[in-house]
Image (cartoon, rainbow, N blue to C red; front, side, top):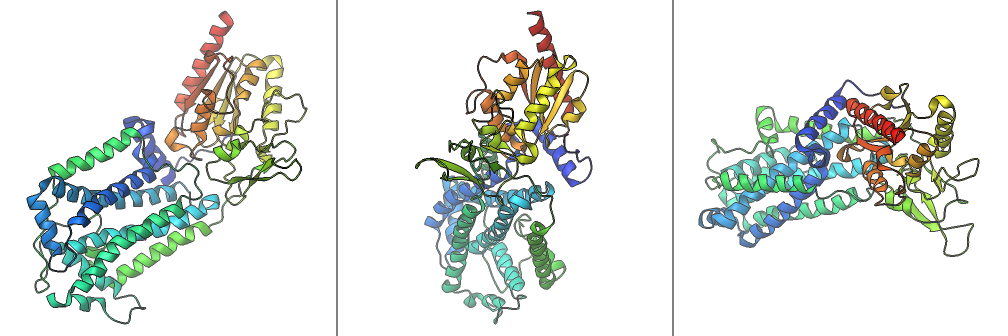
Length: 507
C-alpha cells in the first residue's frame, strides 16, 4: 500500500506550492525543485564577476571606494554592469541558499542517509553570510562603514576575543591598509572555503545537479542581467568614521541582522545565531524510522556496475568477488548511505520476471520489498479470470496515492520508488493478461530519491539499461508523472490505458 499522504503541516503546504509553480514554469523549470543547482549557478556568476572586479580594485584603505566608484561612473559597461551583477547575484545566492535549507528541513531531509549532506551543508550557510557581508566592507562607503562597525560590535560579544574589534574603527587613521588587506583576504578566502565545503557537501550525491535546467538557467541569468541594466548599483558617499551613517540605501537580504542588533542588542542577536545553528545541528539527531537497505546476493551478482551507476547517493561500490574467478567484481552496499529506494534493484540485469526459477533471486534487492514478492503478487492477481484484462498500476509511495486507483478495473502495486521497477515487469504484466500498464512516477524535480523518475523514463524509452523491449506495444503502457496531490492525473492515465486496452481488443 502507498504511504499515507500528508495533508496538513509545512510539508503539505510546501509540496502544494511546488505543484503550483510546476504548472506555471513546467516541471523541468520549477525553481523550488532546483534550488541547489540555482545556488551553484549564482556562485559561478559571483566568481566570474568577482574576478573582473578584483582586477580593477585598489586594495588600499584610501583607494578602495575610489576604484569601485570610478569603475561604475566611467565604465558603465561592462564594469558597472558587472558590479551590479555581482551585487544582485550575492543577494540571490544567500536567498536561494536559505530557501534550499528550508526546503530540505520542511521535507524532512536531515536524518538517516541524508545526515552527512545536512551537516556538511550547514557550514556553507555561515560561509555565504560572511562572504556576502565582506563585500560591503570592501566597498567602504557609508553602507560598508555601517556593516563593518555593526559586524565588529557583533563579534565583540564572543567570549574568546581578547581585544575589541571595534577599536579598528574608532577613527579614519585606525583603518589602515593592513586592516583593509585583512578584509580583502576574508572576502576572497571564505569563498575558497565555500568551494571546498561544497565539494564535501556533494560527495555523497551521485550525479549532483549543479546546473539548472536550460529554461531556468536562462531565466535566472536573464533576470540578473536585466536588474543590473535597469537598476544599476552605485556607491554611496565614502565612509567617514567621524559621522554616523543615517540615510542608507540598505540591502535587507544580506544585512538584515544588523538592524535587528540595533533594535535589540548585538549580544542578543549573537545568542539567536548560536541557538539557530545548534538547533540545525541537532536536527539530524532526531529518531527516524529505519529504512530498508539493499542486499547483494553474491551468487547472482556479476559486477556489471549498473547499480553503481544508477544509485543516487553513491552507496554502492565494486570490490573483488570472493566466490568467482580473479577479475570478477561484486557490488557492496554502504548501509549508512543507502536510501532504501530500490533503484539499484530496478537496474539489475538479473531482475527479470521471465526467469523460470520458482524464486526470483536477483543480484541486488530490498528484502522487505523484494521483486520476487512483486512477481508473485502480480502473477496471482492476473492468473485468475477476474484479474485478466485489468489495468496494472505500478506507483511510487512518495507520489500520487495509487491506493485511490485500486478499483474494479485496476490492480495497483506500490513501490519504494518508480525506479525500483525493472522494465521487464511491464512486458510480464501484459503477457500475464493485463489489459494495460500504468507506471506512475514523481515529476523529475520532485523525485524523493532524485534520479528515480529520470531512470524510469530512460529505461522505458530504451535509452538506458535495462531497456523495455521494443516489441511491447506503446499503446499498452503509459508513464505518468504525478506527485502527491496529482491523483486526478493518475486517474486520467489509468482511464487512457483502459481505452488503449479496448482498442487493442478491437484490433
